[in-house]
Image (cartoon, rainbow, N blue to C red; front, side):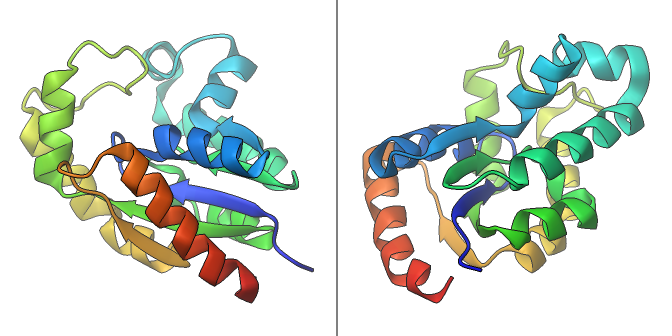
Amino acid sequence: MKKTNIIFIGMSGSGKTTIGKKIAKILSYNFFDLDKEVELALNKSITHTVEEKGWDFFRHKEAEICKLISQKENAVIAAGGGTVLNQKNVTNMKKNGFIILLLTTPEILIKRRSNHPKKSHRPPLHYKNLAKEIKSIWKEREKKYFAAADLIYQVDDSEPVKVSVENVMKLLGEKRILC
């Protein structure tokens, strides 16, 4: 079976949604933001869900939604930053998808989150120190991101999203033949 989906993984703030939406538009694919789909299913934000029911509940719901969305065809999916923590999610995404890790340094993520501290769609922090939080999460997830990725694309702050989208499309053009 030819894989038809393109899935973006990476840390919160790495550009999964921004780049994913643009690529979906170029390809005339449907776009799904996994975190948004979970919020729609629960009728509340991730922040409120985690505050009320905890991370385990959220991760369970995330796995249910990930399995459903992974079965779609011709979709671009922005996976939540922690989706790779559950190997079943990765397995489900790989059945019909090509996974691209948007690799962004913790320093860039800290800068992005510092510039937009009130973005309510971002999950709550465990620590009061943003830098400590991001570095801790990166350390926890780094190996899982690399293990899940079929392709790794470095996104840095000096590169406009337009160039990132163009570069990812070029890489997809070469790699989609292999899918």
